Image (cartoon, rainbow, N blue to C red; front, side):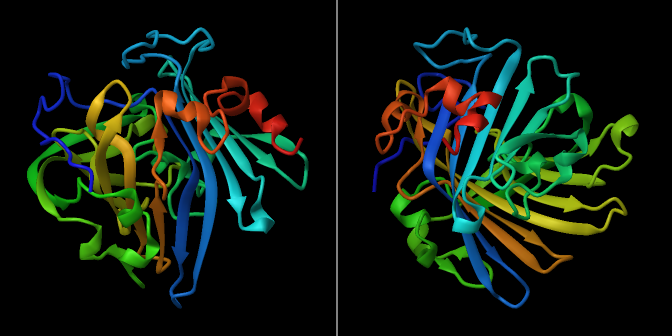
Length: 314
C-alpha cells in the first residue's frame, strides 16, 4: 500500500483545506445498484471534471482562456451496459452564482442532445439514487447562493482515508445487500466534522426535491463524510456516506481530497441503493489525464464543452 502523509490541517506544503484538483478523469468509473429484492446491476462510465476558473494548481493559469464565464464542467458518458451506451451529459457551472447551471443530455436514439430545465437538478444522475445535486464527492453539486446553512455543532464520524484503488475499487471487498466495505478495504478512523443543516432559500424551495440535508463535513478536507436527506415533508428519504481517499496529485503532493473515493446512497423509501466507485484502476488528475489508456481527456473541445456531445457517435 502507498504510504500516505498524516492528514494534519496544513499537512502538505502549508496548503489550506478544501483543495480540489484542476482536472479529474477516468474511463473506469462505476455505479452499482441494488433493489429491495437484492437484484444487482451496474454501469460503467467515463467521468471528466474540469475547472476553467479559480484554478489553484501550480503551473496552471487562474483562469483558463477557454473559460468564457464557465467555472466548472462535468462530463459523464455511459459505456456499459450496451443498451445505455453513449448516453452522456455535460453540466456547466458559471462564475456568476446567480446564474443557474446548464445541463445538456445526449440521447443516442435521437442522435442529438437536449437542454434540460433547471428542475432537472432533482433528476437521477445516470439512473442512480444520486440526484444531479449530489454528483460530486462532496454530495453538494450546486450553487451555494441557492442555499442557507445552519451550523448544528461538531461531531466525530468514522471514515476511511487510506486505501488502494485495487482494494476499494473491488466490489468483492464489500458486503452484499448493504455494499459496506469489508476490513480488506482499509482501517476506519474517527474524523472531526462540522454538522450543517442545509436548505434551499425560501424563494427557491417550492418544487425542490429535498426539504433539508443534514451534512457532516470533514474539518480538514471540507468534504462530506455523511449526509441525511429529507423529502419535502421532512421525512427521512435517503442517507449516504462518502469515503474520500487521500492520494497524490501531480505537482501538489498527497491531498486528502484527491477525488479518489467510494460512496453509497441508501434510498429508504424505495428500499434501493446505489454505490459509486471512483475507479479501479485509480482516477487520474491534472496532466496525468493527457494520456489515460491512450485517450487525451485534457482535450477541452472533446470533454469540456457542450459541443463535445456532438462527437460521441462519430
